[in-house]
View 1 (tube, rainbow, N blue to C red):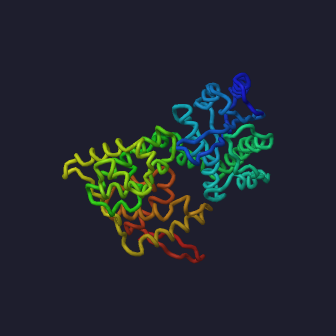
View 2: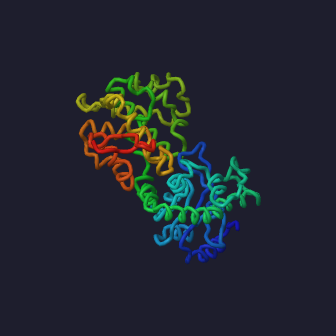
View 3: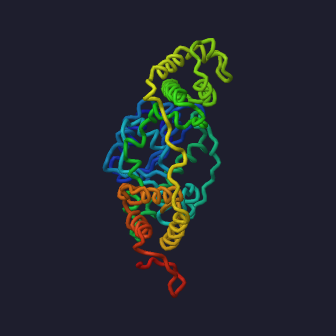
Length: 386
């Protein structure tokens, strides 16, 4: 069903009011804009599935109220970008959420598995990804495009039921809840802090503290402009240009106009604001200028991370999940650094939720020397009391 009118939308949403689960997906374009340009919202449950057209419908209230209902489980595959769109439309997070990509990783079907692969694995259906490069904001949409989009939610329902069955059998249902907490936290979908965006600029460590402070103000201004104009920040002024402006600190429009990559049209539109941002940075007292911490961070004791990585590999083989799902190399490094710097281990990611018992506590015991690794008579590597 393709919904293009308010009456159709109301009838469809009324039919879903008694549903306990909602399969949800979106189609969007985000090539030149700051925010996603939403092209379709697909929703369904039971026998009712539809592609809702937000380009032709100005009021999506019945749908948004349905999504905000805390009694309905919203099922997604790789939920992040869909939720960024829907949370912005709803003005709030929409728990409870179930992410089939996360669930698939936790039952051993592979990390970052595609929707087509998960459908084939769960129900044996081969999906044809013929519309992968469709511009979903162009109208009209063809019947095949609409059917393609609806299939994404139609197959989500049986995939969900299959995963729930496996999660219960493996005693891992609570694992999923722990993993999707981010999708239910408003902070996850807050706009980036403009005052911290300068840290994303490459080669910023080549700048002196005053120039770093100028860069911070310039990037914060650009981020605000990108949101206001709904465009990519780099399309206003490139990173390389901002870095050079911060390095040389021009104080008037004439000096500003000499920078490569700074178009005259943008200079006319934004020159005054850029100079104001520079001036603001120049007023910062010397004692308050930005000084970056050491870039290398903590260097862990040689061989320790390798030992823990070997243990993670063993646990993953036992649990039949990929190592990146349980603890990746970055998390292992952070865990060892946390321990060696005598920080509170209870605050570490690997001590949260289901990971604490399965990997966090054993790794801490290894680091503390309370246990070791041995090869038993069957050739298996096991923890052993020290």
